[in-house]
Figure: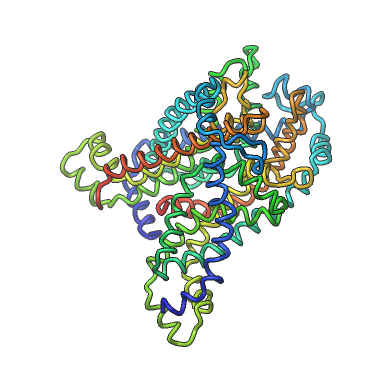
Length: 280
Length: 290
């Protein structure tokens, strides 16, 4: 059978392969190469070695954005996952209206980042207005504004995944633990959490990469104001490319560094939590 | 799976704690808090722009109420319905093309074992961890050079950049299909194309729905890729229109902004209420496989 299918390569695999080459492989390889070049469009590249990378590390806005993004990622991953897990635990107790609550909490996920940013801008500025401030008064307002926004958006998504994980725990396992006299805390610590470890792996992975790569919400909520202090990495890279002339090569070098950080985080996180999973 | 979940629900319903009533009240309050931001945008969309920034929380009254004028002004300024049309065209077109092409590709590279196909699979996995910023500049320049800066061309770009996740998810599913079914079809005289469309694709339907939902959520809301790839003097999608309203540095017309936010949210909410069962199941299935 394999032989018969093999001849059909142009029908089955070629269209995707062509698009994948145009949409990913070529831009990726060109991106790596251009990070060592000075250029304004892709056709006038001049090789300059590591110069762009040296300029990245002497750019204070990049280092600030890196720090801001790292801090934001840690806080948002923790808060989103804790809230999502707690809500999932409470919503699997069979209370009235469970399905309705689940539907409502998930909804913000379908609204795009740009729209979300402006929704929260009007709300948070409305509150801060009473104190004579705005979101762009200081970067810590922008920081916590983004944390609130991301929690509102993502708790529902992660909750859905945790609920599926909790519902997959065999009822007998919980009954057995209860018969052995396990307290609620022991039940949570020794049965529930180990059993939902696959969900925890997925949710931390998703929140980690979403937070680290955040762009739309950052652009719409504060656009990096005041004076780039609430700018995250993705926005910093965008501004370097399109906001400053002569910095395209530096922007590309920043993008390569950004890619390496994202890849390292993703692989490390995956390895770390996978080892904690138990076989069912 | 669904049956098991239901049984578990019943078990937990039996275990229903005595605090059930308290929890219902707590979650009802939380629901109000969750829906409030959307409600706020809705009430402000009917207020004159000066009143929005003055006190966003006040309900419209006879002094601040302006009827539909924010909507009319916003639609004229942004050509909203055209943007809506482009958003629908790009999302529906891209999702359809992604489903068709990547499911065929995934079946082919899973069934035919050679080095090339193994490499394609690894590259797809790899592309999933590459952030868009890495390719954003080169991809947009390449798309311009190849005349893909229009709503049809961008579909090819979405197929290329979205292929990684889709191929990965379809491959995972194809591995679980018993090969005997396909062999039987081929012995009965089906060509590989007939085998795929009459036997394999119908079995893949649940995975196809999951992939479609995940890709649609991404493409519909995507801002940066269409902003960079499309010729935005001619073609704007909904997120681009919203961001465009903010303009450069200057006073934002919050009246039109609120009205356009309402128009951007309403279709999604309607769609969500209509297909929420599939959306939530699709997300769970996607997370488990991803």
